[in-house]
Length: 128
Image (tube, rainbow, N blue to C red):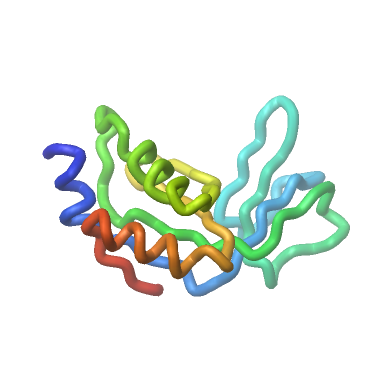
């Protein structure tokens, strides 16, 4: 399948929860994602589940958009199209890739514009 076909047939869902991205003192239970590298621990978690004592730094008010499609490892440029499309509106993203699915986080205040831009690419977008 061509790159364009992933957008034409693409399904995206917006998580109803609002998330926060934390530089954390430890991995947190119930997190959407934990990224632990040699320098820091980053946690993406539902804002209602944070514990202030675990926080080193925090970025609040993110919405997760999940590309609800299987994206093969050899697919080139998928996130480049998404990020450049949103960059046209000066929307920054925080991207997380799972084994076969990509997720982006956008600030809640930019959600409506991000959804509009993804629909313009051909994606269907719904809240879950």
